[in-house]
Image (tube, rainbow, N blue to C red; front, top):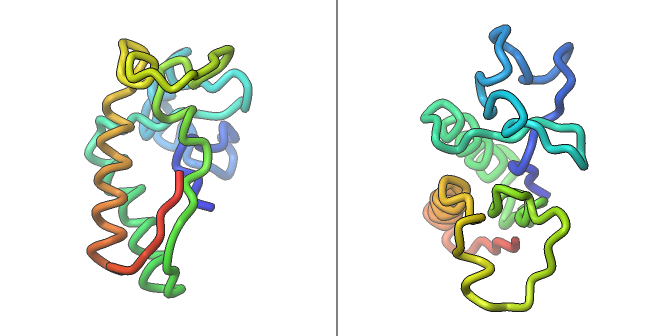
Length: 126
């Protein structure tokens, strides 16, 4: 499992508030807090976040010869609401409406592209 949907909110040994703010790698304020998981939400718009997460993907592929990933928490990534209290029926309007977090969609596309450039036969599941 690759958990790039959120990070631990633990400020003692995690990256939350690593620089003394609540928005170094995550969104600040309530937007950066996942209420159901008590965790921090990555800000995929930040260059540093993309470098951090994508380098993590590449490290697992090269260091441990992984041949695929299951992305954990994808629903939480794809929607500003994190999918909390939602039921999806399959209509495009549910998936690509105003609740869609386009920055996380782009991150997932970049990660998937990187994975298949490094290991063309890799399997990715969301």
